[in-house]
Amino acid sequence: MYPARLDSPTRPRAPLAAALATACVLLLFLVAARWSPLMDLDSGIVRTLHRGAVAQPGLTRANRVLSDWVWDPWAMRAGCAAVAAVVVWRLRDRVLAAWLLVTCALGTLVQQGLKAAVDRPRPVWRDPVDSAHFAAFPSGHAMTATVVCGLVLWLLRRHGAGPALRSAALAVSVVSVLGVGLTRLWLGVHWPSDVLGGWLLGALTVTVSTAAFEKWRGPNSRP
Image (tube, rainbow, N blue to C red; front, side, top):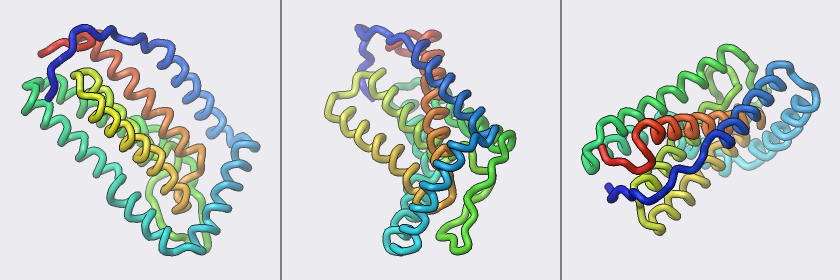
């Protein structure tokens, strides 16, 4: 893909991982405890957005296309698989490719496990504009997008991609991660804290996984 750069020091990840883990645990506790101020804030936001979604069917249809096709978790996972295939083809690094896929799969297991454990109901509407399966917390769309985009950005940095490509990838990643969360809220299938939880858990997954890989293989080592 790109020549490996051997002069970039590994940035310490422990403080970031600790901060993300703390935020995840705190949010999980508040959601599981049904903390009233958070529940009220969630409810107020989704009620306001739902009124807009009902009143603007054209915008709602666009959000459904983005949420159900462009940023759907399976579409994002397919993108991760495509990146892994490129890693094998260009870098001849099957271990790195497998690591990407395992990290993506681990993120899916974590989100599904937490959904079952917390069992948070989704918003219920008399006039829904979309539907979703499984429990609400955390948002699988938000977490999957964060994991996949985070892994791609790490891979580009690790292998010395040019600034133009990295900037473009960063812009696409920011739009995708923020955008998918907003579509889930607009469509009324998640609470805001579900989306926040998906973002935080996705960032934690990427941080821990990439730090472990770099500790094992080095920051920029070739296979």
